[in-house]
Length: 289
Image 1 (cartoon, rainbow, N blue to C red):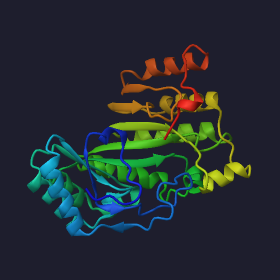
Image 2: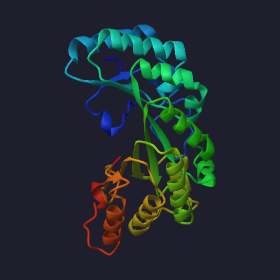
Image 3: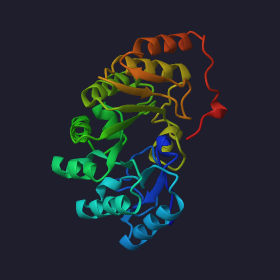
Image 4: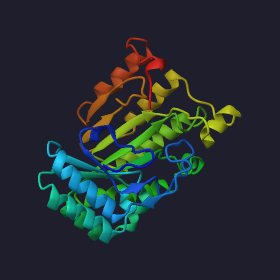
C-alpha cells in the first residue's frame, strides 16, 4: 500500500483497509491540529489508488471494511469518488462498508442525490469533526463553518441513509467559555442527531496556533474537574433519538460509552460520582492522542 505523510483514521476503523485517496486536509486551518502542517493537500493519482485497491484485494481479503484517508476524502470530485468506490466494489466484493472523513464544506458541496449515489456504491459512514457548537469558539479555532452549516451537513448525511459519527472537543473553549461551549455543543448535537458522538479532550500541541496561545497566556486550559463538568453539561444538553455517546478516547480522563437515550441518566450519575472523587480517573501520563 502506498502511503504519504501522516495517515490518520478514526479508532473504529482500526480493522479496516486504509486506502489513502488524498494527502493531507483540504481545510488545514484548525488552530488545534498539527497533523498536516506543512503538507500541501492533493488528490492522489488514479493509477496509485488503483494499484492499492488491487493490492488490498490480493492480500487483505480478511478485512471487511475500507476507510478512505486522509483528512477529507469527500472533497474528491463526485465522478472520481464514484470511480474509487466502484473499483473497491469490483475488486473487493466482500467489503461490507466504506467510511471517510468529511468536513461540513465538502458535504454541502455534494447534493442529496450525490450522497445517495455514494451510499449506493458502498459509502456507509461519514466522520465529521464538529468540535464545538458555540459560534465564537468555531471562529476562534478557524473551523471554517458555522454551527448552522454543521447541522445542515450532518442532517444531509443522515437523510442520505448513511451513518454519521461526530467528534467534539472538551476543553477547546478554554476556561472562560467552558460551560457555554458545552451547552451549545449539546444543542447542536441534538439538532444533528448523529449515530455516534465521540468526545475527545483537547491536548494542546506545540507549534500550533493554539499552542502559541497557551504559551502566551491567551488560552487557559481547563483543569481535570472543569473538563468533567464540561462533559456533564454537554451530555445533559444532548438528546439523541438513539446511538452512542462515547468519551473512551485515549485523551479522556473518564471513559464512558453511553447508549442513548436509555443510559444517559446513569452516565450523568457516573460523572457526578467522579466529580465527588468516587471514581478513579485516568492519570495525566496515560493520556494520549
